Length: 153
Image (cartoon, rainbow, N blue to C red; front, side, top):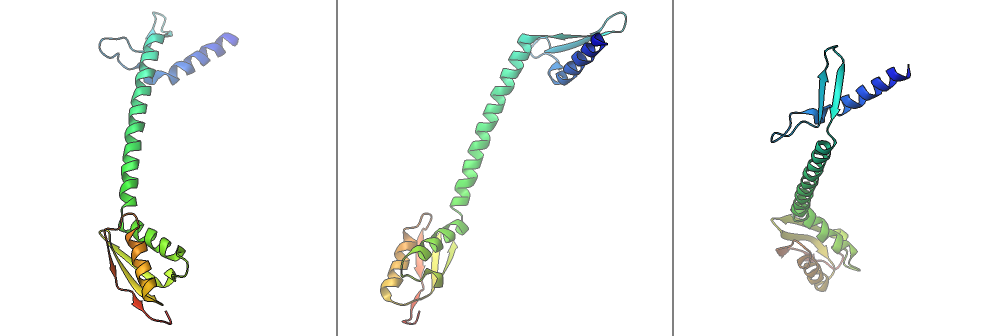
């Protein structure tokens, strides 16, 4: 029984490694070969050095693919970071965080990096402050300040 179990385990292991059993590259033997003898019994030949070479090659390819994927993710993040939605969000957050500005009452719209501020503020100084904050926000190309000054803001 034990010998039968070992044969099954060896056969199972061999089956797991079958993806490595493809035709050899550049005239090299495949990493794993199966053959039947005259009795019809299957024999598995495992070429360790070829397996090492194949695994090293696969590792290099994975590393290269991971590097390329990382570059694509960074580029996508950069594009999102420069999107009008991201710019609007950054401007609005900075206006809301500004003490005494009343940024909640200021609407922000961005098209191609050009920010338009609308709404009401209580003083001309606050109107100017809102414009400065918007202009100093990453991704903003210009600011169209259409805020109105209303003492009751």
